[in-house]
Amino acid sequence: QVQLVESGGGLVQAEESLRLSCVASGNIFTINDMGWYRQAPGKQREFVATISSGGGKNYADSVKGRFAISRDNAKNTVYLQMNKLKPEDTGVYYCNAVGLSADYSPLHAWGQGTQVTVSP
Image (cartoon, rainbow, N blue to C red; front, side):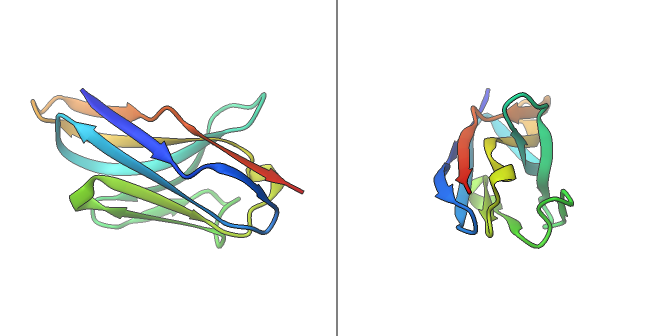
């Protein structure tokens, strides 16, 4: 079993910054992609950013130029640096990992989420 634990959420004002972290642990053989998704109240969960084990990155258009995703493969950790936050960035941010478990079965795990609230 694999667990993802996020941290770093909080309440900030517009234009401020936050850094989210997510650590994966458990029966992991390898993690290929790690990413962040978010869900605003009353809306569906949406893609924010992903990063491959080789460092390839993808971002939602709404966060390009403001957010930066990075990872430490040795620590099975992914980060999301969020700058120039806007009230519309408010939501629960979920970490996601895709790869192989220690028994080589497919791994697709979600964290429990961390709340990010941006006030005007």
